[in-house]
Image (cartoon, rainbow, N blue to C red):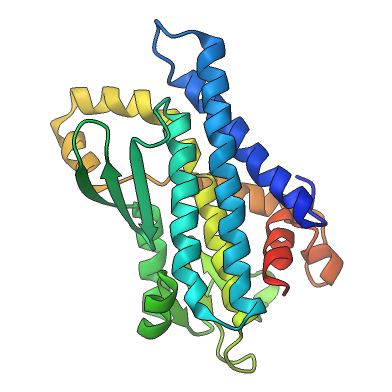
Length: 275
């Protein structure tokens, strides 16, 4: 992936990712009687709209640091959830308005609007496990969590650093945000930066739609899986996101500014949070 240098490139990238991923998903979920070209165009067009909203959500998250104001957290979250919902609908070969998903940490609240209005609650299991791990090791920050709409913790117990290097200002661990209190106090830039990483995690929610048909077949043949499907929304996207993040750092000197921010995901978070 190519690092972004300005907002124009960031706009093109977010719209492009939403459009391409949605178009591929729409074709995968195409019904036999539907025309390929029509399904592809519709999926890509809706995905582009969703990608633009995702871009705008990251701009809003960036205002937390620019204006030193945490009240942008929830508006950014609603905007991001709308954008990712449209992208997921497009990839599932649905109309853009048929389902809206609000992600609050590992919680997923689904609003179904196609035939009759329904609200469903499901847990994202990988995000839940990583949030639980973070909670055990660090201090929960309820006030910050309520203001941002994500689970926020403070502490310096984390994992994933090589050579015992555990210095960091903050980390996004799937959908959990961990802030290090030993680095000079509260920092709006760090909060904004890590919230954008959480949004990046949701950028790949669309890939779960590629497995719609196989999961439906599992449900048909397993009563147990039917029950589990009502409880869990399987967030397989974390494996793609984590893999791409690692690849972006491959061969780079992470101790240097240039090497660390050669990573697309870090570069984007830096761009929006001005950190």
